[in-house]
Image (cartoon, rainbow, N blue to C red; front, side, top):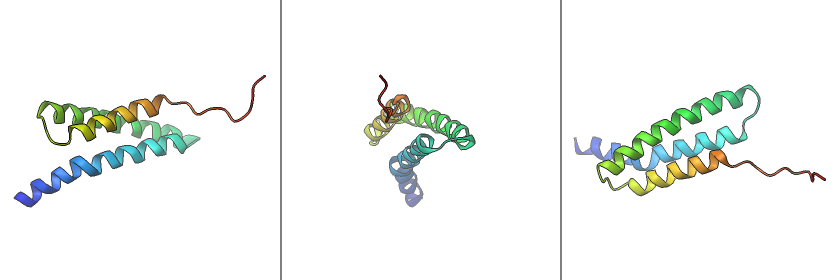
Length: 89
């Protein structure tokens, strides 16, 4: 039973933020019909990360900083608009 709990903590602290960052990256680099699909996936993962962060902070778990940083990075990166390459005069 201890191995299962350790595996859940690893998934919670490492795998969940990695999945969140990969979905964020996918939503930023995709275009066309894949962009709509990636955006829906991003919002789903954002909701899951929000709930995971709330649970982690409420329980004073060890991974609270990882979850809070991941959630903050996802919010800021979602609002980031890349600069235009051409000069507008």
